[in-house]
Length: 563
Image (cartoon, rainbow, N blue to C red):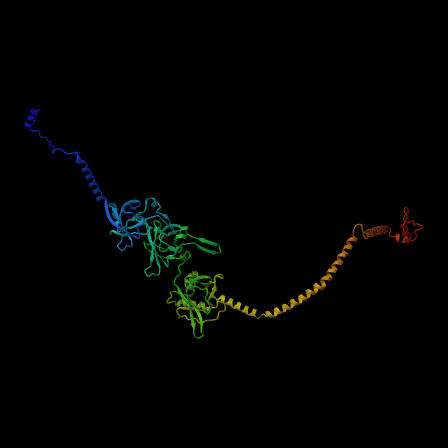
């Protein structure tokens, strides 16, 4: 054992051998290298596909989620909301949107963005698909060459989107009425466009309404086209009965506009985009012939004008030629009385063919400062033309001004140089009716109703006395007389009974009368055959007519024998 130890102690231990692998490649490094390459490629792809970043402000961030809410155009995803924050003044929410590289066109200055949510309006229900997928931001690219990164989002989807063909026009109206963005525009009851925006006019005295007419229907808009408000229901009652007119159910709810070219617009020309047109209140006014130049007149009435309102019609022989524009009080210090001054605008051209004939007959041409019109009206005033207030509706008490020729009208002084021109007037039909009623009331008040009532009371007293006398004396006597009459009738009925003695006696008398009548008939027959029997007497049976019987020497004996 010591030998073994000595031998082991003298020997050196064997050194470990290390293999040199610096000349080879380990597979351990393959996985991190591949991961690094994938990360670099993804970063490069994101860097290359990443588009511009914009900010869109909304009044509320309802329905928007950072990192989830998408931006879509025609239902194609073009970006995503990266961040949502409040503005510095905390007035609105700002959504940071990361667009794709292909959506660079949406940075144009007039691009529009809005939040698509479920909405219920007059035009129907929209955005129902967002109930399941959530709200998203809708986009509409602009056409401007200038770009920007901050946009103000719309509160509702725009009615007209990019690329939609058509033409925009502007309508001028006194007020908006029931119209709104999205209200339809009709042509011959077919929807051809819609209202896209509205705003107050520069002077604030009206409203400018912008409409969009889809192509190819925009070619029907000419310089002679008339637009009118077709909202609600137009109800009229005339000689043909009750008429109800409306464009569609949508126009009743959300309002609408209709247009048409009148028959006399044959020379109309095509119009350019953004051309302005007036918006009339109804179809009848829109399609009416042109009114021509207005002419202002003033009328002086010494009566109450209750029921006469501004815009009340002014008629000439039943034709509407104008309207009332003002009613003012006037004071006369000499008589300490008040009067009503009514101002009206008339349009002589509304007389139509008669107006042309008047111009031809009186040789009137260009009218400078209304001189020729005043001369023409002066001629009619001499013929009895007068202004009169008349009742238009007995139920509502509405009044209107009528210009008519009054027979045997008293001459009046007419000032041709006065401006405005004052038209002579006559009392209205209502005043005449009131005067007639007043005269009737005065006559009725003169009737002695108290005296008539006293006489009537006296007559009633006398009548009461008479009735008392009748009830006390006449009626009992009449009752007794009726009882006697009833008894008499009873006796008469008993006398005519079948077994009564009177009827039997009457039957015997009738038998005797019948026998006597028979004897008279036999005698008359004998005398008709033998008239000589009155002298000779009756011939016995079997003897010739010439031989008389000895005992029939006289007519008396023959008559006795015959009996």
